[in-house]
Image 1 (cartoon, helix red, strand yellow):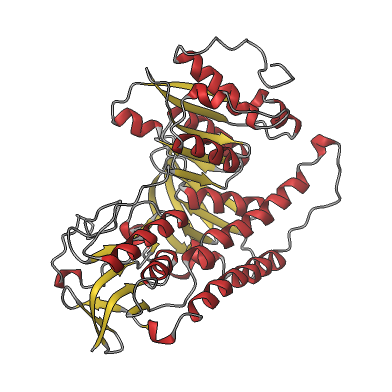
Image 2 (image 1 turned 90 degrees about the vertical axis):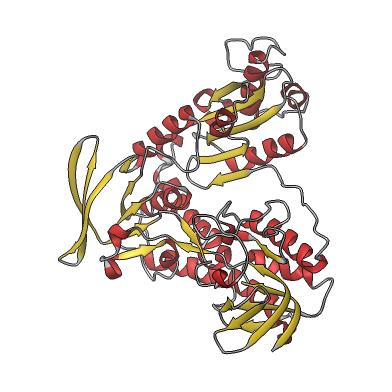
Length: 476
């Protein structure tokens, strides 16, 4: 039996960060990984999806330049070339991750799948046993497959499969209008794949603000077939294709596709860990109950981080949680609470979606007395110049204090505006203080100023904005 101070199960983003933190304190440490090295983000998540989106944006820009007076020749999407670049660049990103892990001492790395046989003992499927004083669970997650698709065989794909394609298919039905479904569905459509996006309960990505949801659904529906809510009545393979039967807007429909992409969420990889052999308490989904600020499971020596928590499935969150879990596992029984960063979510669709701070839904559920300010991007100066003037930004401020609470948006450059607002939120600025900061002209950020001015007036802390464009010239 191998005796260690810290055993980390999983070498993804959370596990790697946990290893870096814990190895600062002890050399009696092991990192256990049953699959290939290389994080979800690098191999089948963030990076390859952005490579596909980049190709889609290039194709879209080339076919929509006429409004600027620019005319290109016939557009042709080379599916093999698109997917070759996706795979090649993806492999490059994965290579960096693998190099990092393989630079760590070989004695610290164990290949295999771990299972608890008691609170302190892990059994590896190779037969090896490890007795660990502390354990970090960082086993990640995997795509969820709805039971309705169980019989589709090779016609059913998940997002991870796309990044191993050698060319583009003729058609894909995307089920799930969350982050993954929106990003990949729109990208495939722009690359010439006949794509239909099927949603549920009229949700659009992670959005909770009804006004922003309505705007987003309308924008996506204008570009490609998108049903914000469907009731699936059948999905079966007929003559080598998937026949999809569904009800939308009270009417029955039938269509056939080469593939069905299940983008219906992810589930944590915790069911094979043997948690029943430990004393830890779990929730109704079998996920250990833990402290969100320390990663500690109950008051035990076991910690959890990343997608395995079944909370925010984002790389930066996984990394932060890995740091907390690794630090606390190394210093246990001393356990430190780590401050959480401002919530920040970005969807790389077009227009982009972002959410910062407390969402509209959270504020309502918590009974917070808040005011809303907004800007519709259609009249925003710089956005109109670039013909990206679509979408809606809604910002929230606390009644009385004037403190900036959060924002939801679909619109131009959301990935950048989100950081601007997240920094303001984490700095606990009031809306008035945000308006004291400089805004250059002409930039998209001036639209944020317009929304903040409207919000400040609604909070009775500033004058009513003039009924004209607030960002179309100096002195506005």
